[in-house]
Image (cartoon, rainbow, N blue to C red):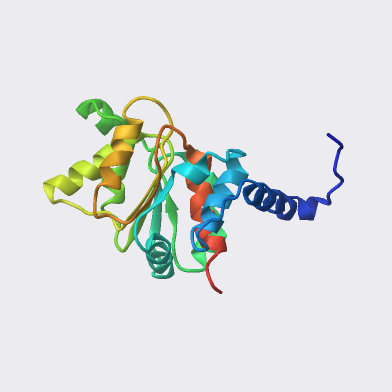
Length: 210
């Protein structure tokens, strides 16, 4: 292949153009509301499999954007996702991003209870005031924590972005929410990751009306 000269300021735009061209060549037409999210996930991963596996609950995009407009907190399970989310854009709506994974009290409580830190982090996120969107890209136990709180009647998440990656309990944890009444954006199957969770949040932020 020949090297294509693209100005640094135009690289992202060109990348999305290529994604659009390849989708068109495959005969794939995305839902207009879901397209910005799916395309940004493909842009982040260079993986077109996400076209087939990204799942959106009814009115998911509208609900997520409404929550952001109300100043929703974003709680994530990794500092990588925390770093990747556009905090300045979120702050325009009064929201903040939180990750409790590095806190000493979280580590101690997780060890004492013999659960993961991600499990405890979701419990802490549930105590935040106001609406909360959980953006989970690494730990299926984060989803299990949220689901357990739901089944006990202790807490119901406002919205779940569930894209943990891996092999142990990943698919099953996602399916719990695919079969729930909680609004969600979930990637079915094993694929996902912190960068994907951040990409979904950013795609929502970037596609919001001024």
